[in-house]
Length: 377
Ligand SMILES: *Cc1c(COP(=O)(O)O)cnc(C)c1O
Image (tube, rainbow, N blue to C red):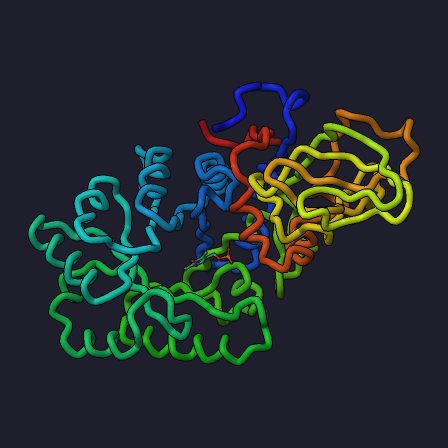
């Protein structure tokens, strides 16, 4: 359920999404890769940022290829661009019986195995069409895509391949965020060898981290996701990227605990002196992971405040003893993610990737899109 009250002043928390930052990050990458095309990965509702809003913003600055994970995401995105010819590619591939849906919604299947290649070839033959496809070659991720052996089997006996309009070949890096890992070079070299078999087909390898591995990884198209949303995780130099989200949550109650009192489920935190605590209105149902219990921070007026006790579904508890009581009150908003404590900082504390935090933000935060004047109507 989206918030029904159209006023963040009476919501538990609000999430600011800065559209100009997304555009800045796209243009930064687009400039960095020169003549290489810069696509955008909008799977999982554009990592929770809102796929249609992000797509329309990126449309304005010339992005013409979008990647989603599922058919449903593809259909939803196509509805934003019904009149124009944006390429929308579905990474999870051509599921049994989905050919008509792909074709009627002008979605491009990423063909991940020989069965999918056959099915799309037969469908195109029967319909007397030549609908585009992307061939996914697995160069070491071992997740999706044709293995190298399967690829060379097909090349030896290319009956189906001949029927296909393969516009792109692609592969995906397993260790892009670890620039020194030799896996990157290995995957690149396997992919470049495969590419020789497709002299007239364009090739794509790099995700966000891959963009920053150097020009040899850019090929004909890069596919950034997380960097567009402001994260410089791992190897990505985060400085030039602009933060996209800020998350604030409200203090719902303040109390003073005496020495020895416990906080929250499991009584996992006990205060060793008189302590003023505040209960704040977000929890793991809002993407504030339960694993952050007793180990995270929030900020208020530039001051760092520890999160104490277990994270519960809808609330966290913070220690506000260091702030004079007249300076903080019920109803005040606390910075959960912002300038002082970025998405990447929180991901590090949570021992996860920023991708996970973003995609789990959920739907309860009141959303405020900033700088939406760039969104095409
Ligand atoms: C998710 C994904 C991307 C984007 O990855 P980021 O790390 O978010 O840049 C690119 N390509 C494929 C195949 C993906 O699954």
